[in-house]
Image (cartoon, rainbow, N blue to C red; front, side, top):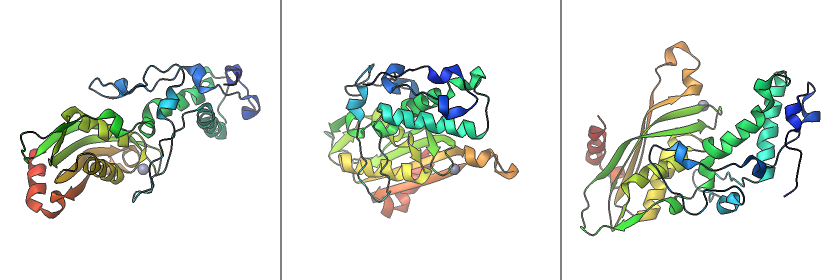
Length: 264
Ligand code: ZN
């Protein structure tokens, strides 16, 4: 790891990037603090105290190109950190912000941290590492559902935040997922640059892949997109619902109605 002058841009400079210096990620002591991002305490496999080398635990998760064509990666290394930091710097610079103003001097670094630590930390996490699978020893194929799981995301069209609630229902096959882990899977796919529809589809596909249930239904509801609610007078109350169905839910209106009735 190269040592760089970590406080170069704190000196302030009215001519922007010429004076900008970027600090390596490790000098910021960034942690992927998933605990703060969820209501329930969690333990993420392996890697979470991470003053150094934490990124080796999560790096190069390349989402296999799939129907969603989401191939973004996190490397989380100093190069990626500096890229984000510079991009935020350039954005603010385009508005001619006063870099002498202490309210800006550390903003690029702060925002880069926030993306890697919170808003886009889903790229660094594999659902396989955060779930528990149990045998369905009772053999019950009855509906399992968890609802009212809050999620946070960033829309890939405007880079504006959106948030809402999620419900995941499935009809078990041979395996059950730990109930608290359903929210984890939602969180992992939400904390990326996303479309609401794609979050639901990816969560549904992943659960199908992980436990091969008879079917899955993911409903994202009461979702407020800041890119909509922050403009347009009539849209303030805009509230979006999306559903993704797989297996039995795809073919049964009755099953879908049952899930929706439980959401009321
Ligand atoms: Zn948007």
